[in-house]
Image 1 (cartoon, helix red, strand yellow):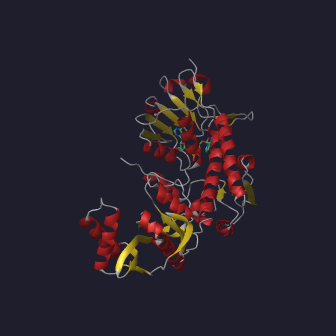
Image 2: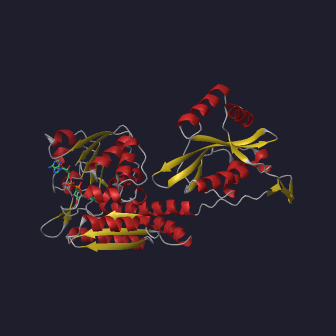
Image 3: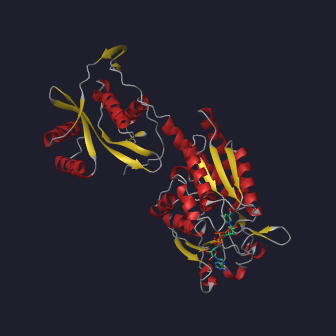
Amino acid sequence: MSARMLDGRTLSKEIRASLFERSLRIKNNGRAPGLAVILVGNDPASKVYVRNKSKACDECGVMSKVFLFPKTVSEHELVELIEELNASNEIDGILVQLPLPEHVNMRNIIGCISASKDVDGFHLYNVGGLVVGGTIFPPCTPYGVQLLLETAKIEVSGKNVVIVGASNIVGKPMALMLLQKGATVSICHIKTNDLSLYTRLADILIVAAGKPGLITADMVKNDVVVIDVGINRMPDGSITGDVDFDNVKHKASWITPVPGGVGPMTVTMLIENTIKAAELRMSINNLEVTKWSNKIRCKDYPNYLVKFDMPTVIIAGTENEVKECYEVYRQLRPALTRKSFTEQILRQMKSDNYKIACIKKDGKVVACAGFRILETLSWGKALYIDDLITDEMSRNRGHASHLITWLQEEAKRLSCKQLHLDSGFARINAHRFYQNSGFHIRSLHFSKEL
Ligand code: NAD
């Protein structure tokens, strides 16, 4: 028996073709996605990696800029450049090629990269996202491994996954990602006693130790899936992994070759993260809610523009006003129960910076929207509309647009960079209305109706 190949080179080619399309779409909206790579010193392996990354950028229509520094560079100089790149409108992703010289504190440097440009996924914000299950930019190597497994339809849930190597860039994030997918994960490292005790239990074995020939055929069980992350340059100049490929392949069901397995995937996922960063930035920059007009088309008389006198919007301040808002909510959302709603709102208003903007007409609340101000790491300050209660009537009468315009002005007044709202899946008319009001629908928010 010989294992099937997990061919990272072919898969990368396919992904890169689709990345090119995405990057073109971004370019058509203004400019190509941009990646900045910072390289310190003369390490030949690092130079090769950086060259590969630049080549992959070209292939995918991503603009890349390499910043070269001698190994005597000070931490301060690097921080200055990173801050400049954080603020640059041309750069969506920033990568610092590791390792850095000893006198430079790697954690400080990575910590300076804006979390929204951290396409390597090493910033603490993104690492934290991995722990709780949801990160903007997954670290590239584990991300690539995960995609290789998914593409080959190799089930991870319920499987014994053994990872050899516990580094911050491969072993640990890999473990967190697969744990999230329901695997039982063991992480082995240099201090593990009797490595083979663990590797023999593995349904999926992922090796990232940097030790050629570390995993031999007697250390794995039949039908194991083997992912060899190791890249070792041999004295004759050839590249080999950590696994004794020629012998292990006869026991494994799947195996990655080295080269041509994980390596190309790592670079491809870097480009994917960069394009994702550009897409996120683009959707923010394009967010211009259409200016409120008090002339709107009435649904029943589409050829007529109807003019409305718009009453002012106020913030519900008293308990009575909140109760009135509740009445509006209740008419439009019969499922709400009075007790839970008013109590929840009043509690939120006290503790959680929650406010309700409402339109009062003839002394009565006729439309309202709950909102709060959030500090988001990736987009900065945002006004988040919790409950924009609209129905056909409030939309046709212009109340909903009026509220959105008011909220937009309020967001600007408070120096917010973005207006946000969530909506249910099935509310197609509402979605159309939001789009007509200038909202971009992004696929970052998922929900499932049970
Ligand atoms: P690292 O040196 O930071 O970590 C190596 C880990 O392996 C450590 O946790 C160490 O305890 C463990 N280890 C070392 N010898 C061991 C042994 N004999 N038994 C058990 N555990 C052992 O390395 P890293 O940056 O994680 O990289 C690991 C390997 O993966 C290297 O060969 C590197 O070149 C390669 N790599 C490849 C890619 C890729 O894209 N394919 C990306 C990153 C790293």
